[in-house]
Length: 104
Length: 524
Image 1 (cartoon, rainbow over the protein chains, first blue to last red):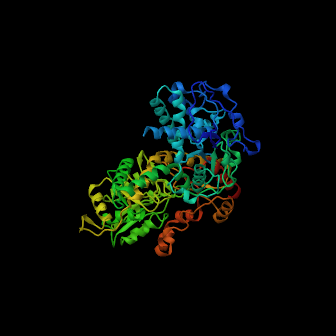
Image 2 (cartoon, rainbow over the protein chains, first blue to last red; image 1 turned 45 degrees about the vertical axis):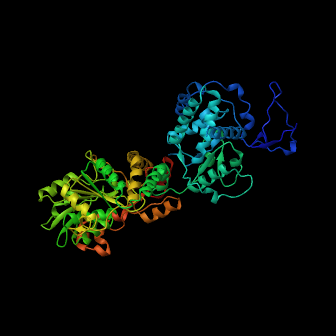
Image 3 (cartoon, chains in turn green, brown; image 1 turned 120 degrees about the vertical axis):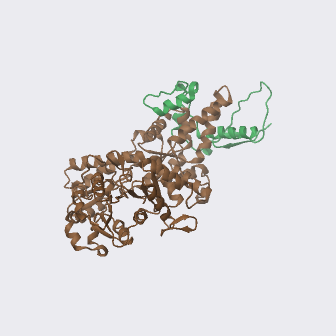
């Protein structure tokens, strides 16, 4: 079958839900013409996405009272995380709104 | 605040800071540290907070063992942001003012609109190219801001405000909005609950038993004179070197102002010359706490006591918050009168004032006079005035009171810094003396200068406004002219020809003061 998707805010979304059998490959390749591409909306995005090596260690709070406060609130969740694009954030936000509606 | 830039944090940077996302989150956190340390102003658009909360909560939910934990943690993180940064005033109808260009992100447009509408030198902290490539709005990545030490966005030789009420308002805007909204909510615009709340707080601040708010500082003087029963045939001793309201209210009450000259170095009533002016007709003494410093009230009170307990009314329009021998201005004599004119150390956003006393009978009289001499509703036992202070103005004073101790501390420090820097610069100016038994809250930072007009003109050309408080002593004013008195008050005349007030407010920055002093050195 063909599945229709929409690209928006840097993310792909299926127009209608498609459910796969267990074990069916869930990774698909989407081919997009180079001339249709816009540069990323994020500043320094190339460096943002290339930092996965530094993650998972707690952010150092040396000389930063604010970081110390964040670390204290986060407790065991105080760790460095990979860079996230604005499109990723949009996707996460949509997920949060959907979850909110589901809860109502 | 020492950096004249208002940082407006975009949503993505706030989430990066909270969750330590990406390689540059620490630059954003450094900016938040600078805001928390009051080195620079930090703002957010209220609608960003919902997004920040959901992004933080969802990210943590993916990592946390239970949902409740991620929600609680996200809420606590957001609380840190909203107590560190200030919310831009967002009404909700901003869409009416936005362009309808296709492709513009609504949320970003609102941030841009709010920042440019309310902040004089906004810099949006973002990693979103929509902001970074947009004309007419300053935006930069936190890394760029930190590494450049703010230099590209510092305004070049901007005008120094004489009294920077806008900078103060930006610091207290949420409190101001909350207090005003409360008044709009209950609708008691006259004698609403904020009036009593302000009076209680100000009485506690000064230590006086009673505080009675009134329509202005001028009204405060009139009400106190009326409460003391001062009228035709009476004399009230005061300083000729003050704003006209002091003598004006004495004359309006039907009495005659009798002037005692000032000390040349403080511009305050010279207590040593007071006794010679007392006659059988003297019904009050009204020293003026000019520029934020109280006159020698112990000496004045002692003289008043020796002559049959003449009431002493402190005209404390410029000195609310000042101290004298460990006691507060407005609680140093029979009655203290202050003003909440916007430029005063504690000001509202219109006219307002208050009288203070420890005398229960006088307090009762002044409360009645304030409301047309009513003892109870529509029962008038004395002549009064319509002299109430609006509830909204009281609400504004209450909002400003939350920051007042900090402001007084700043004023004292800035006064010391002005003195040190002017003295060190070699500028040819005379400085006001502050007596060791009191402080000066510097309603204006006033100096003595020769060739005043030329100096003022030269400073103004460099973006530095000045003012003269006051150019003519009252006994030389056409309406109050008294040649004999003028001849007996040479210090007042001398000061009137030389005083010049420099920019002063709690939010004056070190850089602004340095500019003022450098200009003074060049021009004086």
